[in-house]
Image (cartoon, rainbow, N blue to C red; front, side):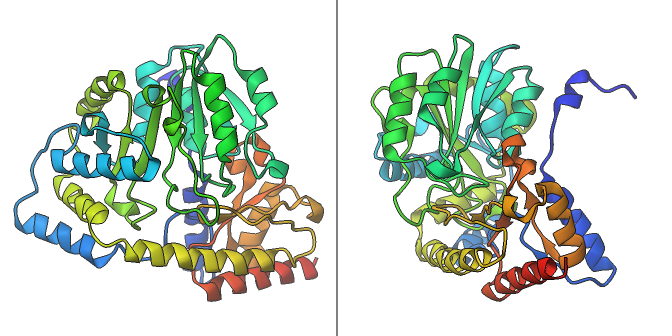
Length: 387
């Protein structure tokens, strides 16, 4: 069967490929410490699970509104207004199955062939994959370690052109854990405010910051009607398998996203949306406890990584990933990631899984127990001692 040429432009998520290889090794009797997958290792909070059970008992098992249930959209609008310091109406909220549709649908809606999209690199690989798929031109912005893995503003200004149609921001970021400083956000807004540009602000890790709180560019004057906020329930509420995300967007985009949604998914599962209301309006204690534990793990794991010869790991400001520089080991990223899995029993990702500018780095998810994290660091250290 001949596939459409656009299929050759689609990328993938290496995390799932590494997971398959790790599971194959485990099937052979090998022990593997999983630091490759980006999902919380905590259970979904009990009150959210109970809300879903109640919704099933009450018959929330049928089609719902394509844009999302009104009560959930109201809860999201209240939450985003409170956490970002902006006024958001429920009419701007689109509920979708997971966060990725808020990458895919707006790109389909606004990008033409040849339009340019500035995006961070290294970053979540689906950004570049979708840019290529829709026929736009990816314009990577190297994330600079010396700047805390945020944009070089002078370089960003140089990369802006008359063809720039979209800019993607991700703060806190995957894979680097970087948080864009508020002053840089304001400077980016100043450069973009008077341009015909849409900003896709991926804020899925917005609650997972360990120092300065991340600022949304939507809060800058004149930017609310140019910005799409991507957020969801997967990370903050340990709900990765529930597939519940949302976008807050300019009114002009809502209709387009709804049409794409009705053509692809019809609607998001009704009972999961009831669980989403409980997540936003119920106790936040489980999420706060999880984030506090991530901070504790981060501090210990990064400290251990920095004792490994050739490793240099800055302390991530957000998310739950460590992104050490491994240039001092003499290894390239992909061969080292493969060797650590095969010979040290530690599953991680090459920095190049997140783009060409990830060369020289590895990504470790510290969404695993403290015991396993310390054991992983010890096994990596022993791997190099045996070289």
